[in-house]
Amino acid sequence: MEKETEQARGCQAEIPCVLYVDEDAGAYYEHQLGTDSVRPVQSPDTFIHGFQEAEEQTTLLVPHGVDGFEDSKLCRVREADETIPFGFAASDDRREFLQSQNECRQDHWFEIACRFGVQLSLDRWGAKFSKMQSDGLRFLKVVGFDGGSPMAEAPWQAALSHLESEADVLLWDGDWYCEKGWTHLIPLFLQGDGRRIVVAFQKRAEVPGFHRQYWDIYRRFPGRVWMVVVPDDFVDSVATEKFIRELAWLEEMYADNLLQRPTTWTGDHARYLRLALLLRRHQGATSVMAINGGKTAAATAAVENLMWKEERVKWTVFGGKRVDHKSGQCRVEEKNSTLVELCEDLKAKGAVPASMAFVHLNGCAEGM
Image (cartoon, one colour):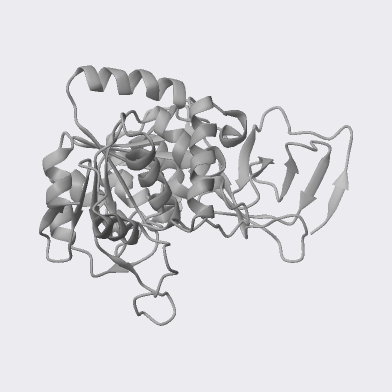
């Protein structure tokens, strides 16, 4: 590995540069296919060498000992409105190969996502959303704990039945996939009816990682897994009066110990909460199905059912517990840190809004 600065050097004209991202750092790099170097978009005269192409040149393995990278790999980026970057339509034989359960593997995640997925900007999604609403399609958003983590003691069949009876289109905030997490409901929802669609919302830097996670679901359900690409600076660039009031109201809830302040591994306590609240502007007053949920889900539910009393959104909350990765046992959560606890507290106080329902582990729904 070496790093160099060259004023004159650039990508050769006949071999295009391709964009990659360090998802954890949110940093972008250009890479000329077939070489071992990248150059930061923010510092295009600096070249960093020693990278290894993998997964059909769509993943770059970061060399050991190089500073400035947070992830161990860089993933290829497809822009929100970019056409399929291969420049040709797939032949029948190629599509058959990409959808083959026995031959094709995750190495082809980028091509699979490009050919079988639908990727939209926020503006294009807004037009699609309006059209689907006018056509009478029903929407339901699914939330919970981190969708990429396993859960236990959840009434999965009751949750799936509710989802299938209430929605034609499932929305979620781009949680990673886990066969034992609530995201396993996504392919089950799709396979139940060939007309159903699922729509994920994800920050631009994290979209390639999402594609890499959902590659098998893309190919199983061509054209029915949609990705809405959210600008990386979305949280920082939008500050409506309503949003500011919501954050101020939540601060009062935290101060009174009615809710626990959300925390994230990045140390930015409010970032995921701010993103969840802002994305609701692009999801309408869509009803929500929650498989329990942590501090962000509880805060969002409180805003939509306790703060905005004239604009309440229907929430149906199912029980469920997170499983610890190391012990395999159900986790003991902090006090006042889960959505179910918020529901139970409201029930004990006789203060449950009619817009909320809680489904116990036996699957029996009751008004809160």
